[in-house]
Length: 428
Image (cartoon, rainbow, N blue to C red; front, side, top):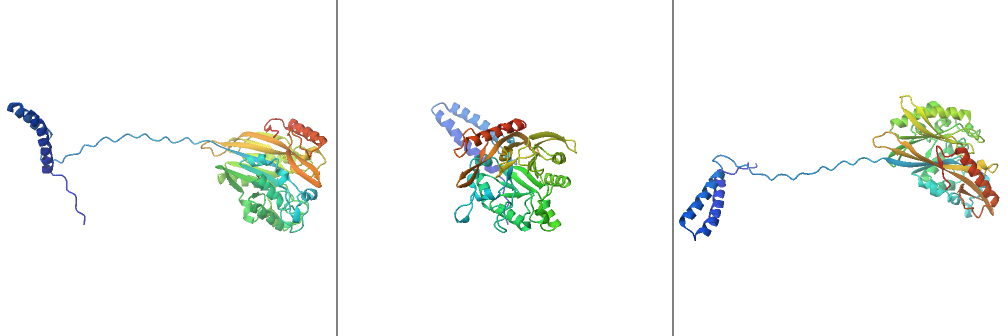
């Protein structure tokens, strides 16, 4: 059992005071011994009176005097800073048999990395870059054809700085559910997020949300339909579960879901229209109206082989609020062997900057820029390819004067078509 501490008694206090008094009297008296006895006695009397005034009465416990605590200054809470992120998008990548052979190397391997070297700095600069791959990438499970490319094309895109591949196109089921699943697994193996398809039935109800420097960004993707080959693969239920088909009601439901999950930025990718469209078709414009009213932030279109004008619009949402959205109706071809017209060889890399203000649940568009691209084809034994900034003023040594002039004219025509608003063109 612990003992209770006792307080300091009056006797102890009094003894201490008397000891201090004795020392003090000595200090006063001894210097005065050389003087008169009356002076010594007077000095002693003064000291005794001073001590009596400070003595603690019997039965009272003295209270110690505490030194004042030093005052502290509170550290101000820092004001949260706004977050800015950049997202880049481009058109479709499509390997026909001629372009596929351009990647053949020794020992029957493939390498397409050289194709993207000139645009890699622009693809890798953004915090997140998305490209549409209009082919199956399933290995040689059914032989390589126009719509089954070697894995090396994904390796090259990854090296160039691409983070997300959208494979919701009409070709994704051309070699069946097996090819779709293999494409997904190959993409994941190279480190991509893969959108537009689902390898489980539950996947269609959980669109991808990624964290981009603290901004929760939802990436949704849909295609207008499947090719005649793909539409015969599997059962109707399997096709519905595996591929995201454009449907306004479903898109509204998906947008509502990702917003409930905390998405601050919502991007919708749509593979739509006809390949030869040079401007948005009527059904595309109607779909844009439906999707815009869902409360998305960006709509990115692919499938037509040419770049269409960009647009921003303010929409009035059902809850009474207004929202600005950015629309790219068609990004054109990023990589293709098509040579019929210059418009088919041109593509675009679109870079959007968004800023999220402190306390805001959404992000706002603060900058938009696009760089036109050109697929250069040249011969070095067989055909070789390289994607260039179309506005470059340095003629590549592999490019003829005629092709260089064609590229420059196509570049100027695209700038005239798209202007400087809502996105600013950059040469390189």
